[in-house]
View 1: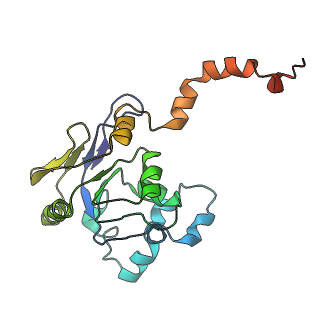
View 2 (view 1 turned 135 degrees about the horizontal axis):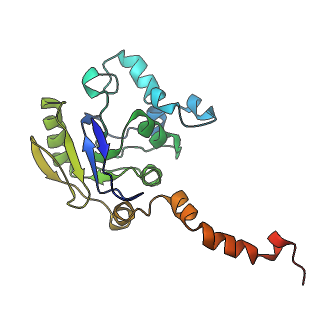
View 3 (view 1 turned 135 degrees about the vertical axis):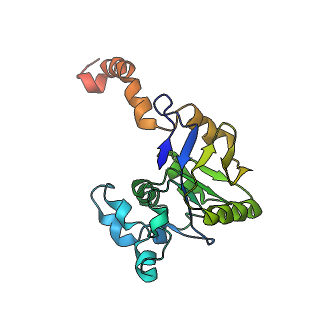
Length: 206
């Protein structure tokens, strides 16, 4: 079960779903989606290849292969997740696997921005709190959790923990301003008016 809240278009205030635990610091984008998959024409098939090399090495016991984690939508990580190259394929692969939110001790800056551009919240908590959340999830992977961006917490029947987000990105998610494409489309009438006034688009001469 996973669900992104059904607020007005673009507005993200909560994510409901099961959680998946990915332990380890400094998990980089090359591990999230190996470089050979960057040649793809579109992102749509990247979900099947997320953590491809790690999953092959672990032969079915990787968190993204465990039966109890299939369909999970909130990824709980540790420190400096998404470091390394700036490839936008990494959050695309996670999203297309089914991830709709991440909680960790910290995230690499460019990875964080790429997630925000997809409407994927990246919330943070202390190392101690992340460890507690991960242990709670492992006790019962079937639990449904709620990441509430308005209340700034994640909770289930197993417990509740506060999380943090920078005020700018948080406001963009809560007000639906993270989706630059939708915002541009919503201003179509204004854009067409502006287009008519541009000489180089209308063959105007002085």
